[in-house]
Image 1: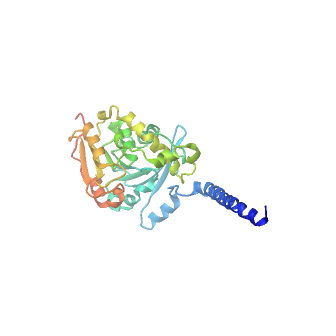
Image 2: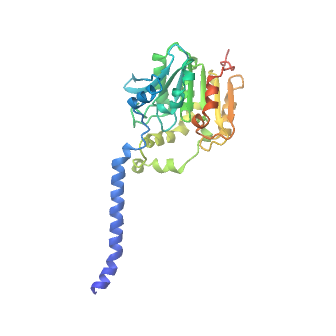
Image 3: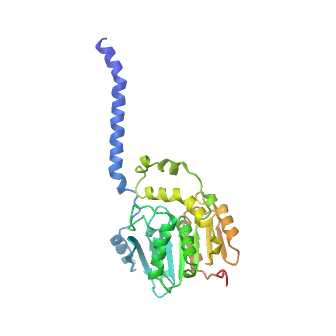
Length: 302
């Protein structure tokens, strides 16, 4: 075999080798930088500086419960009713940033927004199901907000979490406001992205806080089936705010689910025409007015 023929035969082998080296190098680089991107963490000092420029004072604290840490931000009048914001997946307390910046809310409310367990500075990276998270956040409410008038505000995954907190003790809450909340187990779709990263061998490839976000969303459908039992026993007045163009948490299916468990005496529905899943920010003025408005519905059983 002459040298020219040998070179022709070896050329594809060398190309494959170069491609393999590139792929391995890219995977190694991704493994190194992956934990540091898309973490959805908010630096406390940066937030304090940003709010101080607006002459606003924001406070941060950590609540410890049975080895768990719950990080939270608060602003407004501590003698007034509480708006307790619960973000979706992934995310952190700063999902409520615009509301925290809105001084028109500070006179009438104290605003509190948490890093949900597993996100931000609340034991980042440790995924927990709906019930474990509800227990942690409910412990904070019971110990630190006892006797206060509390309005829960849950967006996306924060919606079922707020509802589960009401199931644990609905007498603690004056209202449960669902902003595109993932309430119906039948509306949870099987998504190929979640199934792909459900494999432990591939899960590490999910960027930043998406790893724990993927896990909790994989568990959510079964969690919703469990929490569906006796859900009608919740007595807390419910405000449901959904967008007609939400392709992540379907408008019709979730509202039908709520209507099937709660009557019009307890349930107040707001359908935002043309709104998508990001209505807390895209339709800020409307959502803010819904939060501020007096609530006519009454607690079940009264």
